[in-house]
Length: 430
Ligand code: ACO
Figure 1 (cartoon, protein in one colour):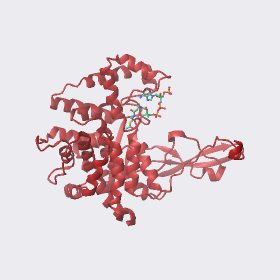
Figure 2 (cartoon, helix red, strand yellow):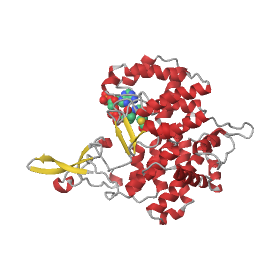
Figure 3 (cartoon, rainbow, N blue to C red):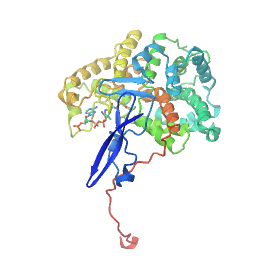
Figure 4 (cartoon, rainbow, N blue to C red):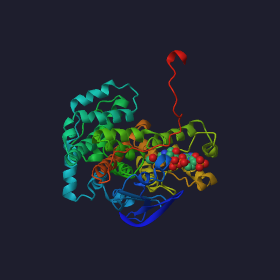
C-alpha cells in the first residue's frame, strides 16, 4: 500500500488533510480513519458503496473492464488449468501448490472428510422439505461443537484444523443435505476419489444404480466451484470478516457467511433465476413483458441474475458459466427450454435503454442454475453449491483479517434520526 498524495477536506473554517492510499493495481482510497478524531464527524455511506473496509491481497476485480483475478491469476486461466482444490489452496496459502503440495492437501482433505457419526443423526430431525441452506449453516456451527479445541488454538493452528474440517466436511454435509432432501440413503466419501468426484458421487450414487463419473461433468463441477471461489468484499465475505472481528472462531464466522449468502440479492439469486425462468415458461409470459415488469418502479420485481454492485459490464464468471451451459447440455444431450428463455431474456435486456443506462449485465448467477439443473441438482441446492465454492474465499479472508495489523472489531457508526429525549409515562397513564 502506497501513501503519496493527500486529499484536503474543508468543513466550515476547518481544513484537514487526509492521506490517499494507492493499491497495487492503481486503485485509490482516501484514508478517513482519523476523521472523527479530527472533525467530530463520520461519513454516511449506506451499503458501503464507497467504503474500502480493509486492505486485501487475495482478489482483484475491475468492474468497468470485467476483470477478475485471484492472487494475480485471471479467472479464465484458473478455470482452464486448475482443479478447485488448487484454487482453494491458492486463495488460502497465497500461491498455487506444486504437485506434492496438491497431493498433501488433497489427502488431508480426504482424511478429514468423515463426519462425526453423531452429526449424521442431526439430519434425521429436520423437517422433510427443510431448505438445504438452513441445514448447511446450522451444521457449519455444529461442527465447532465437535472441535472444541479450536477455541484454545492460535490463529495458525485453528486455521489448519478448522479449514480442512470445513472444506472437506461441508462438502459431505452438502451432499447429505441433498440426500435428505431426496429421501435417499447417505453415501460416504471415498478416499480414492478427488474432491469434485467425491462430491458428485456422494450426491448421486445409489446402491441400485451406481453413478458413473463423467470427466466432462467432473470438469464442469470444478469450473463451477472455481468461479464461485472468491469475490473480494461481497456481502457474505464481509459478514465473515465482521463476525470474525469479534473474536468468534472460524466455524461461527463461516456459518454467518452462509446465512448472508442465502439471500436472493446475493447467492440465492441462482435459485431465483431458475424460478423466474420456470415461471416465464409455465405461465407462457412474453420476454418483453418480463423486461417491462423489471423496469417498472412500482413493482419490486427485478430481473434475477442481472446487475452487480461492482461489475458495470459483463461478469467474466457469467461468460464462463454460459460456455459451461453449452458443454454440459451437449454432453448430456439435453435441450433445456429454460436456456432458450435465458438467451432471449439476455438479448432483450442488453438491447433495452433501461439496462444499458444502468449498466446491468448478466452476473454469475444467470447461467449457473441451468448447468446445475442439467447435472441433476435440484433448485433448492444451487446456493449450497455456491457456498461450497465460496468457502475457500471466506476462509482466506478470515485468515487475512485475523493477521491484518489494522484489524479491529467491526463497528460502524450511524446517523441517529429518532426521537430526542422524552420522559417515560407510567403504564397506568399511557
Ligand atoms: N432488474 C431491474 N433493475 C435493476 C436490477 C435488476 N436485476 N438491478 C439493479 N436494477 C436497477 C435498480 O432498480 C436501480 O435503478 P434506479 O437507479 O432507477 O433506482 C439501479 O439499477 C441500481 O441498482 P441498485 O439496487 O442501486 O444496485 P446495487 O448495487 O445496490 O444492487 C444487486 C446490486 C443487488 C446485485 C442488484 O443489481 C440486484 O438486485 N440484482 C438482482 C439479484 C441478483 O442477481 N443478485 C446476484 C448478484 S451477484 C452475487 O451476489 C453472487
